[in-house]
Length: 580
Image 1 (tube, rainbow, N blue to C red):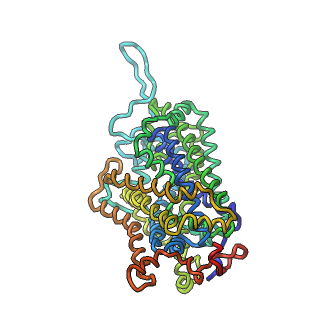
Image 2: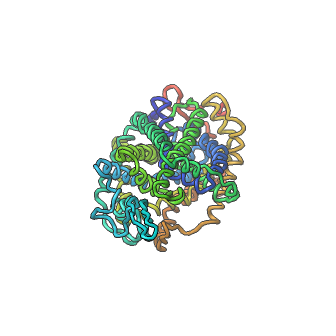
Image 3: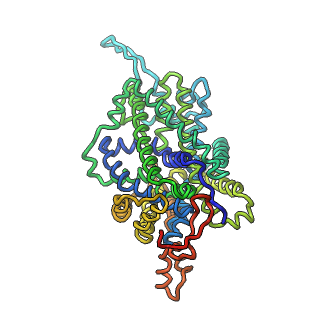
């Protein structure tokens, strides 16, 4: 067994983990969720879920990856073989994630390239590609009332059925969006080439493992904060910004009685920090054995929460100005998801001095936010294959760099349907079913496997072996009871309140819904399949003996216990299990 690579410095791991956790969702999902789920009141369930679920589970995943020195599949197999399928499921989710997440980065590059023009192309409706429904909302109407002999000069009322130039640019030019998923249409070659470029960037970010990734994150993980601060400073100086900020934080306490608000708070924390996606376990598996875990937990969680708030204030300050310029309420200009950053924000920039500069900096920030999450998710796949099929990789691919190229190429090809004219429908379908449907299900089995079958107290002793002290009793209680109960309750509520997926009022055909559930099943079925495989491989003369042995951690067998020497990274046998 080859010695495992380590991060050159702890700060490189921290920046990589922060870059992975702080992604596009912090910019477009949290602000909208906060506004729609109670404003300032949403911060109560958000921080409760952060403290009682996200932080303890982040601690758990960091400890598991660092102790086992394996990716999610190997880590779960070492702790409780019966649940190794939950680890495989996170790899499946990461693969599905990589196929469509890079498309968002490609869109951001597409916008960035169009920023270098004297007039931004999304400011008017006089282009050949504009649809008949395009209407310039910044135009003014000027008329004289013959009765009162008074004139009016101001924003014209937007006719029904029309769309703004920014939305038309996004829908008709960038996406060339068809009427439904049934109309796949042609491949958008310019987007396909940009998508290829994105994958080349990802390749060179991770081709040498932590050694190359650790150098990239010094820029990609820090630059977005510079931009967010600049946007916030600029935003609060604009007219109407205070209205936007107040709209963002004004509490609606009655919404705290709505279970969906609590589900949204949990989902935001899980998606943002990346619980049950496999990335945290994978990145921490490259840590040195005695790395201080609790310090990393607190830094990652605090930075992630601050980023959510910083992005919210920056975005709503600018939305307040946009609403004032259009004579609308802030609630009438906000959108959720990609529409917030590809429609509303570009429209807001058109009212600023030097809009090309602000737009270019903003989209470059989006690229950096996305690329960190993208290469970390790709690393999950590469690490898993390398951990479990290393002899085959060495035999057929010769070098890890070739394996990275194969994974990137396969993900690129699987992502091509997302850059067709019907690609937005595929993109949204995968985004919904790949993780949203199955994430809590997988998180529940992961937590149960580690804290109940392997044992929360035992994990605490492992942490003491690495760091010299056991975790606070708060974490033990959360691992045993609070986190699993919250996850199960949220999962149950999500299943009870399930509704067929819709996209902007568009109903997917039956075959597309079936396809969506098939995508969800790719990860969900990994758990029972992994159980069957573990029981089949376990020692024993009958099914009951095999089941019992499949629950026992391989670490219980002194002949199979090994971990990395904290001083040289080499494999070291553990002679006395009682010391663990």
